[in-house]
Structures are given as C-alpha cells and as structure tokens.
Picture: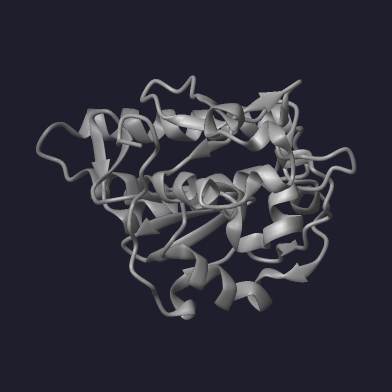
Length: 239
C-alpha cells in the first residue's frame, strides 16, 4: 500500500511521562460499549496498521475476511487513503456482542492504531504534550474509571506510535492576522475557560461572552496599529 492509499502519521519520540499535560480531574475506563466502532465513524488505516491486519489469519475468523478488499474501503477524506469497511454503519470487525474480533482473537496490540488511541488525542506544544479526550466516548462523558494520572505511563508509551497527534508551533494564529506566542495564547484560553465556568450565566450567554472577548482582542490590536506587538496588546487587555 502506497502513501496515497494508506494514512501516515506524525512521528513523535518517546517522552518522559511527566511531560504530558493531562485534563484536570478526568477519569477513563473502557466500558466495551462498541460506541466508537459504529454509527457515524470512519476508521482510517495507517500503513503499519494495514500491514499488521494483513499479516493476521483473519480468514480463520470468517471467510468474509479472506482478502483485504473485503474489510477495507476507500476513505471519503480529501487526502484519500483507506479505512476499515463499515457495514450498516458498523465496523466490519464488530461482532453481534459489540466486541472487536481483532481484540478478542489477537489482543489489543493487533488493532489499528487509531482504535488503540481512542478516545485520546495528543497535541505537541512548546510547553509539553497536551492530552485531550473525545466526548463521543461514554466513559469520558460520564467521567468514570481511573484518574488519568494513573494512566500517565501508558499514555506516554502510546504517544510514539499514535495516529492521533497534532502539533502547535509558535506563533499561534489567534486570527489570520493576529499571531501570538504560545504563553499568551494560554492566557487567552484561561480567560475563555473562566467565562465558560460562570454558572450565573446561561450557556448561550457564556458562549456569546467568549466571542465578544475574542472580538475585543482583535479590535484592540488593530486600533494599536502595525507598530504594536500583538502579545503586548493582548496581555494589556487581559490585565
């Protein structure tokens, strides 16, 4: 499979677990509900995952898995690639008991990398590697399971092979014409987070307040003119 048929991923070196920035108070334990394997998901395959699945004796599970064309499909993503075939909006490897037959027969390490990653995603930043989690996962929404800090070593080990890695480089574009440093961006993010925590306001009003706050930043920088340093202008408004 060439690069134009199977996805490739960003290579990240193994890091010290202490460099991971974890969401405060978040817990996780897989509930084996199969929700991430059905309904509205596309399941892209990177080259290594595709090769790993092809090397497995899948035909021993079902004759429907004899050839890779039977369990893959072209991806609808703009960059192309392939993914696991969906049958009735369910992953072809999801059985009637909502269990992954790859996991059941060959272990969790045999699954496609994106399946091993879920529900976690990584963002590499100048201040460390931030770990996020998908709210599509019922366990994440219910905040049940082990504290993420107890999973820190496992999350760090998974990073080097993860399919779900993004990178934020400086400057960060708060808007197309407003580049700021990452430290300044974090302060903007903290202000937005504080606004969202204002329970005295409705959610609609909190979201509107966040939009107004960002518009004020943009307007302040523009009023100060081209000679102004965007970071200084943003920090002045925050203060």
